View 1: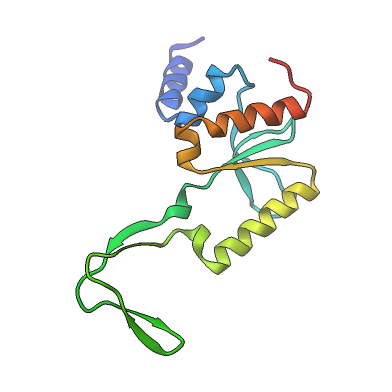
View 2: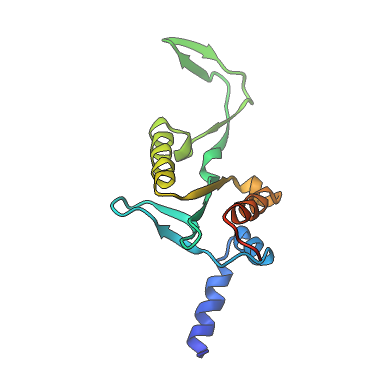
Length: 147
């Protein structure tokens, strides 16, 4: 392997996510990143194994950001102002939490299923606590993979 190739590999490994390290530790095949699976749409999976038609999606944006409300904050509901206690924390944002974002996700995952993909979706918490890699291992077993 050339020096440039080694440098590129090292640089790529520095950008690995925790799930990438777990995939290697579990002796699963190396995935493709940002794999475009649809013949027309520009949809991509975070990680994919095209040979096995297994995909992995990290749903980290679903949690949004934490906001602590100040005094005098109200929620508008059905035309009425409902006071919110100062110091209350609220999670807002995240594309997956909007109506349009949730609908787009539903279409993407439904189209993937129609094309025969097994899509494992996980939050960053599921990656941290090991549930995500367990689900991926189960998906590979379901498809007949033996490490």
